[in-house]
Amino acid sequence: MKTKHTGFTLLELMVTVAIVAIIASIAIWNSSDMLEENRGENFLLELKRNISFARSQAASTDEIVVICAAQHSEVKNNDDSMQCRARWDGNKVIITFIDADNDGQYNSSSDSLIRVMEKINLNDKVTFTAGDRRIRFNTSGRITTKPGNFIFCPNGTNENNKGLTLSQSGTAFYIGDTTQTCS
Image 1 (cartoon, rainbow, N blue to C red):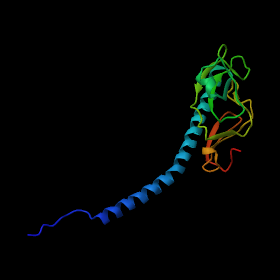
Image 2 (cartoon, rainbow, N blue to C red):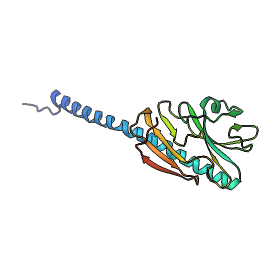
Image 3 (cartoon, rainbow, N blue to C red):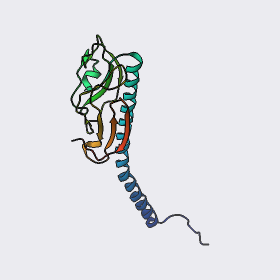
Image 4 (cartoon, rainbow, N blue to C red):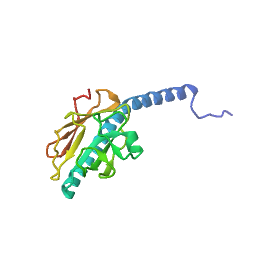
């Protein structure tokens, strides 16, 4: 009596594995762009929330509120004073504080640190086209510095760039994909 064996031949198994490998490589290749876009969008939306919070905090408390980029080590060590840096990327953390002494810098003796964003990835670039090292909100919630655009360039390239516009009224608008660069 003949018994019939059911199953896959070695050739069928190899073809199936090859097809799965090709589909997986296409999925991984396309997902790197998607991950860059998501990282840029998440960063700028978190920055938009911080800007909105700072604006409402300034208007509701009649205090001067400042957003700026501080050195990661200063924030991590909870230094008594943190300098607002000219660049918004490269081992920086974006902080929001009430500037009670109105000097534009954070001093723990007089100012209140109210928000800290996560550290910016060293490979990513962030620029603020207004060129200012800080965004200062007066007691009406308007900015007293120049308005401009934040541009986020994932991995420091000019692909998948995202943008956020800051108006003179202190309102931030997420604009998404942009052709502006971080250079």
